[in-house]
Image 1 (cartoon, rainbow, N blue to C red):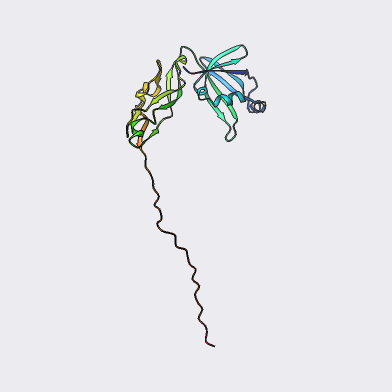
Image 2 (cartoon, helix red, strand yellow):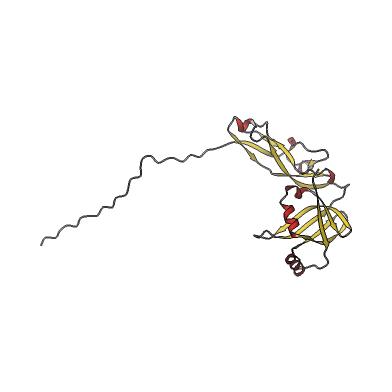
Length: 218
């Protein structure tokens, strides 16, 4: 199961661009929480707290305990809007979750056995990651922090597919549950070395030839 994080939020009544700018100047981030059959609610979050949490991979797939006053709601992080070039968060979208309703979420892949698989260790290949995350469907209580992708048995030119991933109980790949293709997650491919041709011998120095002027007869 994914790690649980706690967020302290404040209810936000003032809306609009001007109000959001004032919040950001105060070190706050405008946010909204929605879903689970309830009306959307505008919130403000502490900017530094969110920015610090975003550095953790677990935060992106965690069940968040959002506390606003006396009310505590469970939610997941759905979207984060960042400043184009500054480490500043502009807006956060949170989606409420219900303990009895399945959700779908992108979960990162952790690759195992890359250095020990035959295709790399003895056959001169290199593991190529064709996916870095997968979209899964499950109940909130079953949401994994990550999914392991074991490539330790792959030979050269072999691939690991979605159907070969070991999923926790109650978790399924969203695309395959809807009849999607069994795409490759990783492959072992031959490494191609591009060798530069060495220039043999020393480079000849360019000589400047000054033509002799013919003497004119007196």
